[in-house]
Image 1 (tube, helix red, strand yellow):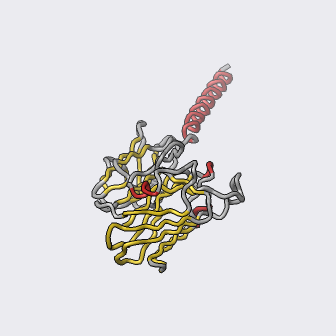
Image 2 (image 1 turned 180 degrees about the horizontal axis):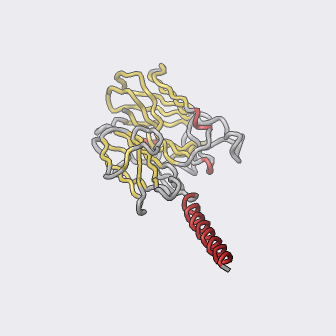
Image 3 (image 1 turned 90 degrees about the vertical axis):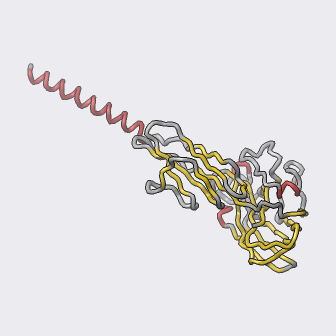
Length: 266
């Protein structure tokens, strides 16, 4: 009889251990949701503030501000980040009992305190379905929303080349040009494959973007084109969308959309 009781006790102990292990396993296989990123201003002339939030006991937010991937060695977020230069902020949440969250990011761009663009002439015009605010909206320092439906900032194009003739307010020193574009591949919106910048017919800047054909998450992206440093009064920016939607996409072979909402001279 004593042997039977001992066996019953052993079985109950094993069941308790299995139950506890199941509870631990059930938490460890679930990833945390992503943290929330809030920015006082995406475009700023002196300072902007980035706040990262995630309300869950024992959760730790880690971040990077140099564009590098976030990992266990990254800085721990403890207070709002005050930035005085352009930066890419990436963040993740970690917890001892759960899988880490997906990585989220936001990019902020330092701009001139004065409006530098006097006029932009686009060829061709944007689609009637996505006209944005016209060419004038490309220099208003107001960024479009990631949920582009109904947002008036985004200009949509479905063509092989887009040319923007830009006249500056005066002769100014320039070393960089930034193009703000949208990626939303599920809606056939892809970043451009290449951007070229000309001054009086001479090429002064180029950016190739091979990542435009790679599957990626949705969001606004700032593409920075280095310009031969000098004093300029005008540019012609030529944007080349992908020739066609890649093979991995359900719309393969079709002409993709290109969405632009801002051109920034630095």
